[in-house]
Picture 1 (tube, rainbow, N blue to C red):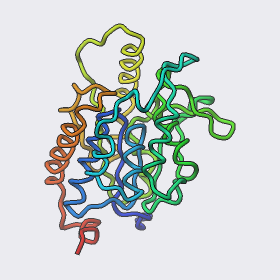
Picture 2 (picture 1 turned 135 degrees about the horizontal axis):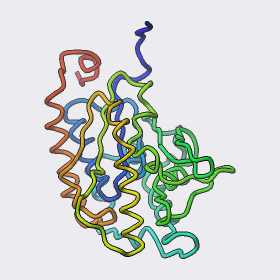
Picture 3 (picture 1 turned 30 degrees about the vertical axis):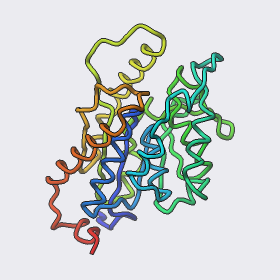
Picture 4 (picture 1 turned 180 degrees about the vertical axis):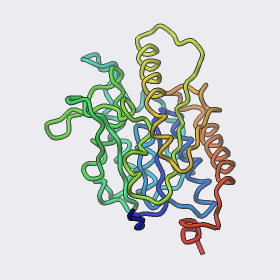
Length: 267
């Protein structure tokens, strides 16, 4: 059996999870402090946002700063035509913070974003193309946001079929770290259209992420952040700290004396 090395050493896959996705920023900070900056990164939904910001050169701490004081209504407005909200404002916000990078293939760190092909019902990924369109597609929770058309195909949130994009880069890296910031909250959901839509989506995500967690060499599930609301940006610093702390703890289980870590740690 062939045992050749893969193109990249350390890969990181970041799940969806709305505002809980800021735990990914904390996780990336913990990885950096351990000398384990990813060579390749993949994201879905909230994970796609953190992925492109990080790959564009933004520090984890600065990710928190740019969202300070931002409200959900600053990024989305009521739509009422096949979805609850329209998120063109969100698309512009992301592009305003990726510097001169407007396409995925331009980013210094290879970046893969998971989406769902809404027309054929299969998972898909992008590693080339317009950052704004692809991130918006990856974040477009059905009913809450409209599908995003790229080319001749409509796409929705990657979390519909694969909330953790381990499948996208498993064959591209020697060691894959998966971070799941979307644990299922067991409390009863409300009855508004928004609450029912989000609860349904959360149930789908919970059902489909187990296989991707199993693909990871290190899978980190952030259970402590389950109670934070998906669109609540007020507590992102607390979420950030939870991701940071959980990742630092999880990294203790890695044998850093073996490859690929011996050649990945900064000298």
